[in-house]
Amino acid sequence: MLKTIMKSERQKVFYWGLLIPTILLLVFFLVTPLLMLAEVSFREVDSYLNIQDTYTFQHYIEVFQSGSYLKTIGTTLFVAFITGLCCIILAYPAAYMLVKAKHAGLRTLLYILLIMPLLISMVVLSFAWIVLLAQNGMINQLLMKMNFINQPIPMLWNLTAVVIALVQVLLPFAALPIANTLGDMDPKLRSASMSLGENRWKTFLRVTLPLSIPGLISGFMIVFSLAAGSYITALLIGGRMQPLLPLTIYQQVIQISNWPFAAALSFTLLVIVAICVLFLGWLLSRWEERVYG
Image (tube, rainbow, N blue to C red; front, side):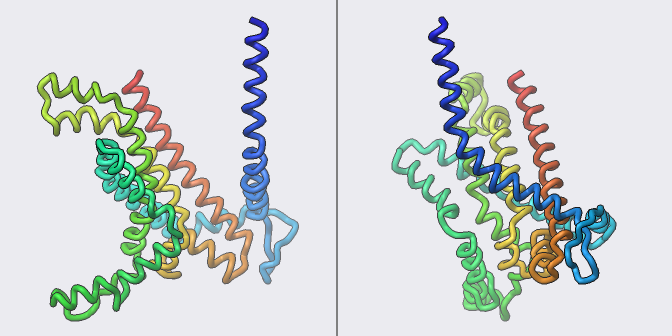
């Protein structure tokens, strides 16, 4: 008995030892920079935007008192919400096909197609959308050759183009959690539903879809978080003038050099996204309590 307990303790020490490099990496390169950024966000600046040794809440007060910044926050959350919603709608059929594929070769091919956007730089993917949506891009050229339009349609430099590009770039982050949830589902539940007289459509609506909600919420949470903080795609597809918070933070850092205010904007975005994710996590836990007890 004593040997068993000592062996178990040694295993715990060994497992914690394996985690030490990861913990140190997170502490030095994630937690420490965030704490330093939080400290900078409360620093005062003089008329030349030099950082002073005194502290103030003025940057946060300015963020929430300015109608322009509030509109930018609202637009950023709206774009992230629409992107997340579109992603889970489009990702569900792909994840369903992936899980239901019977042949290993077909399943591998679908996996490769699904994760392929993750293997390509986001800059390259964004430039590909520029090639498609530009005034002289492939879509406008094709529509003009087919005589559907007489002059090019402006498709770039707007929020719609940003959402389309973000959906394509972030789709795998929604599909993989959904596929994982569908793969863990007991197939006997579906067979039991159909043996009780339900057809395929009702079985999907009453069994498969409700049990896959954890995957849908997880996928939405990931895409929402990434879309809210997306900078490269928003800049290349939407342009610098779109009212999105990552672009505003970039302007404050690079063009205005107001680091404390940029840090305050960054923490505002971080806290708002964290609140949204925690709320979705609370909904997920309530759903699991209702289904599994």
